Length: 159
Image 1 (cartoon, helix red, strand yellow):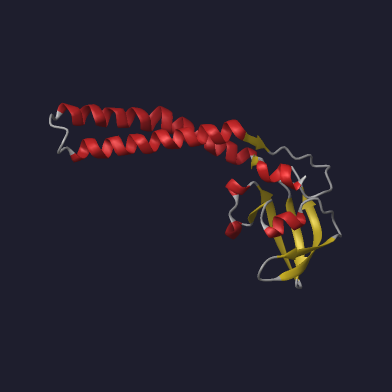
Image 2: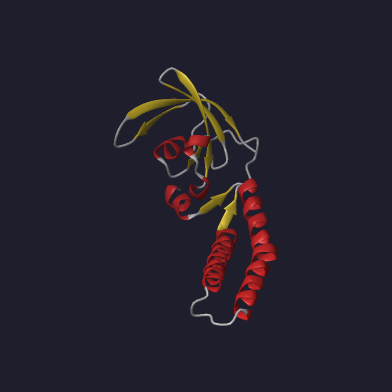
């Protein structure tokens, strides 16, 4: 099962909505804005020494690449739909653990959403892998190249 998960791109519903909004903004606002800049720069004449034209073309390329990237992500991603009755840790779960006498909370997300400083860890990270499939009360061993420690599952929130 881990092999299947690691080849799949997961997104939370919120992240998918953020990407859809960014895509709409890029297509509806930024693309026409850049097209106008390019038209204006062309009207100035000589394009060889026209830094405004060069900058606009560079911005157009960046925007086109970002649009393609977002479209690809949205087309290939699996949107996480957690069942709140599920009792096992899965992508999209928020897990409260006890480790070395303190409690921590993590939300398990797809690799593209991981933000460890915000408590969002990838299902492919050492902690994420160890927590996947675990249940409340279970202790799991988290091993990395640097440390090895036990995490006790205190609570799991899905959905």
